Image 1 (cartoon, rainbow, N blue to C red):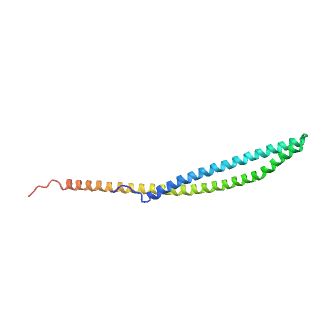
Image 2 (cartoon, rainbow, N blue to C red):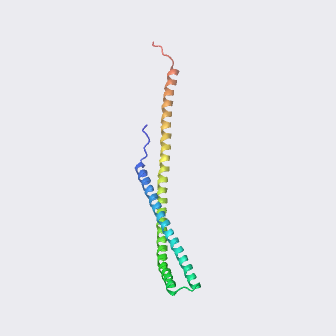
Image 3 (cartoon, one colour):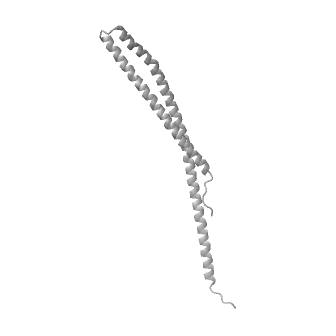
Length: 154
């Protein structure tokens, strides 16, 4: 009997490579998402600090120029924060797409692995049956030879 050969082995190998690439893309997307969220957090902190500084300026008798400078800084932070939040949403979307792609390819790989396992079991059973048939044939021949007994030529 010939050795086991999975006819979709090359497909499985290709899918495994694609799964590895999908995992890399997912990790890259996760890193981009984390970086975008960190940038949003930094800008939120800057906005909070700027608001606190403006509040302090209002409470104390600070010159108008200092207050105006802090106010301008706060106004510049608004659009930067909106841009950072938009980038974070986009990074989250990219991460979700990468995760979905990885899940899809992982499912395909698992299905091929399962099919390979089933074919291996079928091959193994067929091999065991063939061996058993050979053993039965040898046993039958020996039994027939012993049942016939020694023949004396006439």
